[in-house]
Length: 376
Image (cartoon, rainbow, N blue to C red; front, top):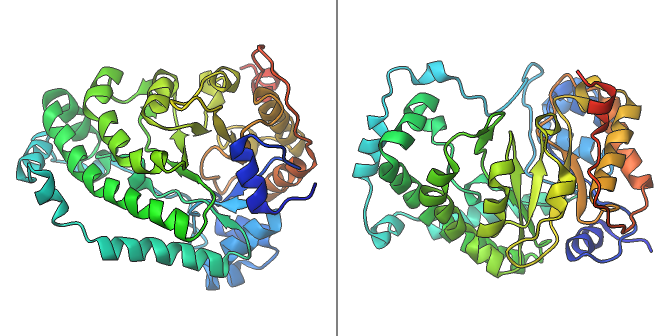
């Protein structure tokens, strides 16, 4: 059985037989690394970075690509960096004032939503992907669909987290207003999933956790945040689109909450914190579905510091944890850094094509190979 990338992705979502485990690209940083992966020069990459990203992922043979990281300069190291010094002088009352300035009625909130512009933005994204991604299947990961937790990007960590404690209703109101707009965006995306016959799979979910666990208490999140996320994603869930939640930090206290509001899979994982995919594999979505996993090659340990043999051992670990690759899609745990050798990425994406999927239920915890080899 030889499947197209789209067929492979759809059949994996549905739990049907596949010829090999599908792979996902897009989260790779470092202009020089991407140029190397694409077999081109740094100068040619920088002349058209988006084309260079596509060329690199096409060379790796990925089945699909999320909204990609696109380094624009030779010295760009990372994206999405938040520095607390940039928010000096901002007090938690700033969130209180913001909330008080927002409308209280849903109709008034939605009066400022531009349906035409939002639909055009999404259509432009998909049409560009179909025209320029050389057949790589687009898997949307529009972050506004997964919730609006990181108000720290607007107010800084100190003011935001303090406001969560002092003014929880005000913080919740800010999330509610943002979420009403994103619910309408989700409705637009339901239409586009039909119009473009997209793979019914979407990646989203903002960072809620650091290495110590949730940044705010689970009780606070259940009352003031998660109901708004559920409201956003409900149109997509009702339409049969399966949603994958991004999992940075120690997400274990929140896994059941993500499932309860409509997510049916997970991406990322910092295995050094004790995340056990075998345990997550036993969970079921609110609809009773087996979970899906964008099993993330470790960007903090294996990819930057390992050898190709460590990479293939980690993939074997993913396959074992998912009972032979059930619901598994190979991906990276986050955007890879410039320190990741391109040969490690080549090793990962070439090896996954040789792994034969199978179905075999196991109740035993799998051991992350890096921890076995580096117990310190």
